[in-house]
Amino acid sequence: MADPAPTSSARPTVLVVDDDAAVGKLCVAMLKQGGFETLSADGSPEALKIFKEHTGRIDLLLTDLVMPPPDFQLASSSNEFPHVHGVELAMRALHLREGLRVLMMSGNPDQELASYGIKRGSLPFVQKPLDMKALLQTVHDVLQAPPPTLAENAPKTSGSDVEWFD
Image 1 (cartoon, rainbow, N blue to C red):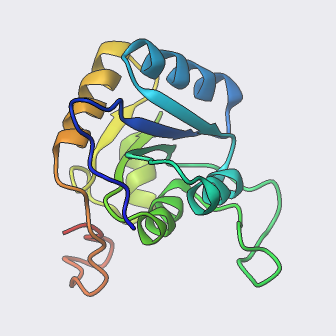
Image 2: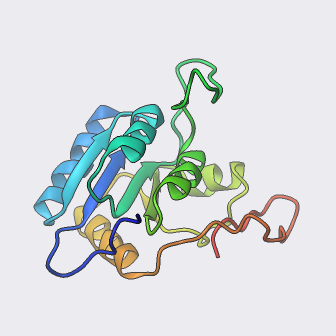
């Protein structure tokens, strides 16, 4: 069963994922101060495990775009929770949790988005260093928007652009 959409009577839950522990703690502190429930993971393997095993609701994934793996890993029957970058984490999470909203963050968005073939503006994004007011406003905006759906069969608009949400 899908997680219910956020309502005014329930505090939305945000899963924060960043491989920099200080950034993760800062995000959690800001979100808690803004009235959100939080979960946190220090990388994609832990986040994927939370998405699979957490029985409560998760309304929003707030993830760093670039999370370099400590070593090479592939998903397999023996490694269900591989270390992946933020875009791959978002795609996997959307398959695990219907109704999930996604918000990406990065310190160098234009270069990093382009390196993944993502057009700026095609997904919700917040820039590091984080400003609390901007972060909370963006989180509220994303939670009010309809949840994304993967556009697996969408045609590419150019050789490097990927439309990955309808």
